[in-house]
Amino acid sequence: MPTTPQPPTVSSRRAAVALVLALYASPLARAEEIVGQPVRPALPASAYIALLRRSRDPSLASLLAFVEAEDYSGLSASLVISPFDDWRQAAYFLPWAVLSSDEAAATILQEAYIGVRAAWKAIDDAAIAAGRGLLGKADVIAAVEAFDRAVAAEEAGIPKSLY
Image 1 (cartoon, rainbow, N blue to C red):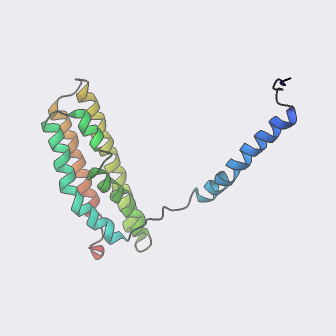
Image 2: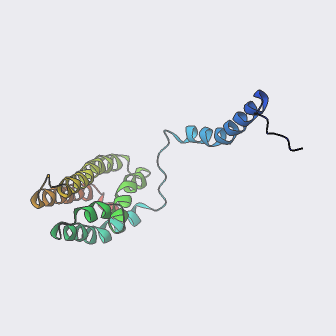
């Protein structure tokens, strides 16, 4: 005669919860150790600078091509793929790579990156609004140009000794 399944007992539920907590406890403990620690870039500052220089023009050209075609959803999507994403990641990691050799320059670069990040978000917001018909092509072009100025400001903060 087949037996019917029995509902879990209190002790078996506690054991299951304890198992789940044990599985998550180790990664959470490591995460707490990492919080507050500086980012550890994988490349030297010179490599990030080279990547920024190499990908800036193709990134800007890619953005403007989407604007000219009035492909605002494509523009928004292009912000998270190469070549733009390569540039964005290099811009993010550069201040951290510079930190070990020049703290003052790293601070300037980090502040500039915050401006670049805001301009990047403004492009995405403008593309979404233009796709909905709330903004025009000129508004999106203005956002791309503001982004280019923010990028130039970040590049101006790169110490000449790193070129």
